[in-house]
Length: 320
Image 1 (tube, helix red, strand yellow):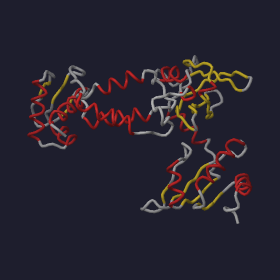
Image 2 (cartoon, rainbow, N blue to C red; image 1 turned 90 degrees about the vertical axis):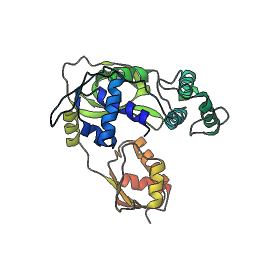
Image 3 (cartoon, one colour; image 1 turned 180 degrees about the horizontal axis):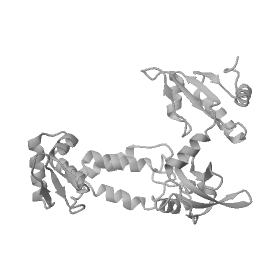
Image 4 (cartoon, rainbow, N blue to C red; image 1 turned 45 degrees about the vertical axis):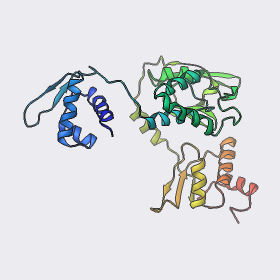
């Protein structure tokens, strides 16, 4: 790390700390004591008021948020930001309406001589979901649901929400504690804990008609919610072993909540344990399609008869 970068990073490190020591700076930034002392002196000269405390365990006190240097990005950091920004095209992400101004500001972070590299990257790199003839084109179907931004703004204030959902011809409201907001299978979804029924529920953001802070006085904390959910956890009814080819397929795509437990140090074999709600036709169809996607390099240890039947109807490979 260059000296200027290091000093700026140290300033941000100590800015929100009421107290720090030279030893902490040495350990955090892997620098010598003399270098740490020189850097602290330069930071003091830049205007950050530090008060030294003498003694064996002495350190420095700093007035919180007194001075913060302007953030400077390295050339590689700007490239990383720009590529990540490019990859966000057509991903149904909120806050991306002003893409042109965002791109111009990113370009403005680096000298003009280096801007050509970003323009070149924009011309060369293509990501899944983009139009190869016009990568900057945003299809209407790829724009996020307008309720998504409102939802994010509210949940940043409080996780206790009242969501109103249209389910068929019915409109229902649920007081929930929001656990996660995630995107899977091209849909944004809310995973929430229903505060009345005290169980987990999943809602599609596309089905929301309104979201607001919950008027309920009852408040819960995340720890208690997770404790209740653990007690409600269903027994794993699908257990499969995966070989190297199936693991490669798993890495290409897998349901968000699925995770592998590798069974050897080379990560060439693994086991997957999960629960499938076989009473839901859509979930049953999805898991069948996904298991076929994994290919033949899997072995079933436990499998519900409903999944077994679906696989037998679709393929004769798995159960001979």
